[in-house]
Length: 313
Ligand SMILES: Cc1cc2nc3c(=O)[nH]c(=O)nc-3n(C[C@H](O)[C@H](O)[C@H](O)COP(=O)(O)OP(=O)(O)OC[C@H]3O[C@@H](n4cnc5c(N)ncnc54)[C@H](O)[C@@H]3O)c2cc1C
Image 1 (cartoon, rainbow, N blue to C red):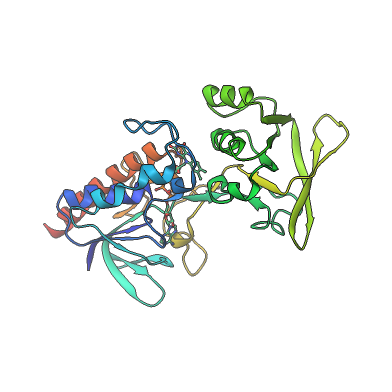
Image 2 (cartoon, rainbow, N blue to C red):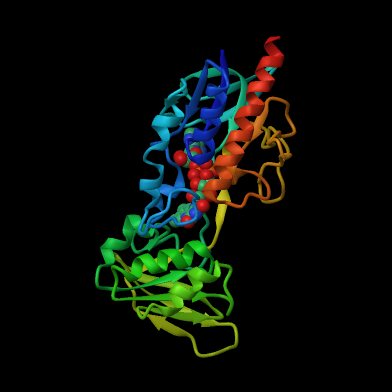
């Protein structure tokens, strides 16, 4: 029987494990289906994690020391994908497909994944020109023209990253104002390789068997549609939460979620089910930032510790 099962090994999961084990829980396993680190390892630049600041710091570099520190007090990592969490009597059952593990508490830290924009051809050319990861795929377009869709921090940061590699970066955004932080907007505006196409959306991505060849852009104000012959398109239009592990066989969720499927928690990361916590991008009102996910993980780890201590008393 585990004291605590943590699902997901991003900033939230790793920090939850650190706090739970350092606080005294003995049997704590973090199920992370990949390498620990989470989605920030896809980011080419992070400059808003306090205390760790240098120009050109990548998400991978930021996360590199986390696993060793977070596992120092006994947290174990198993590289397994969790299928489902169920409540079985007083405890939880973590379904790993080939085996079932019992746990006294569960912290769900499965994060979020980039959302698709939904234009024609997006799925067809995904992985063949359409991407959601500039650090992974940007280099394929060295000295070529590419497009970025989106107007938030991630879109503009990744556009700046691509501008270092590519000959030109078109940023297509549906509004004429940005959600991104003003310093990021200013840097992107000043970059000579970045051209903004505003009040615009992508109608279609087209290509052939070799991959993407271009996109067709339409404008809100009825201007003539525009065709850009770009072999690479990077889509940054938000995230969907990874709540699959909470879905039960009958289609209901193990705990309360909102309309977007985000887990409803209180300020102590308690879900509607005692002993079940959710931390990081998966929860309601998440700022979707590394520093916030780590903080949530710390709170959830401490709460799991209290819960087990009371259960065992
Ligand atoms: C390109 C990009 C740039 C970003 N830039 C910044 C930035 O500059 N500053 C900032 O603060 N934030 C940034 N973010 C956001 C930040 O990465 C997230 O807010 C943060 O990583 C959320 O942490 P998390 O632990 O909640 O989830 P994640 O980091 O999403 O980690 C969840 C983990 O759970 C694992 N998992 C999911 N389902 C299962 C399962 N069923 N079984 C086992 N494991 C599972 C996944 O493999 C993943 O590793 C960026 C994100 C991206 C993609």
